[in-house]
Length: 163
Image 1: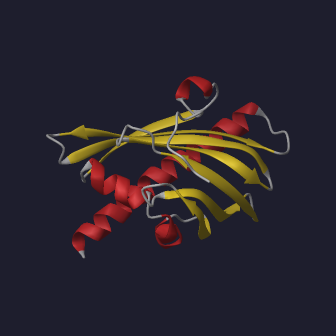
Image 2: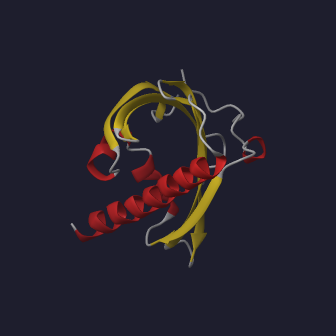
């Protein structure tokens, strides 16, 4: 079951991770709402094929969430535990189960920009596969995932604003 206690994924524990930032034309709350609408991920997150919310936290947000995604030419399944804590501008997660991944840890930070009408979204990701791969390949893959996720988030918010 998910909880909002102290988050073990504090970035200080993520020694080798990819980080990217993007300004998005939405408020931090709009970004948070899109990110926490896990069931809609297959509609806009290209590699995500299905999502099941297995447990919710005390406020009804997704706590334990299972994903099926395309990865390296095959299908993978993993379950993430989400942490919301006391900072409404931060969402973190840690893998609790996975088939081809040993570790997935990450977080989104939503930093208000232009009086809160825009948001700088910072995405931090650290992942390890169950098989060994060279460090430069791992870093390149993490960077691609982070970049694609930020672009997809921006496109999802832009499309919601025009409908």
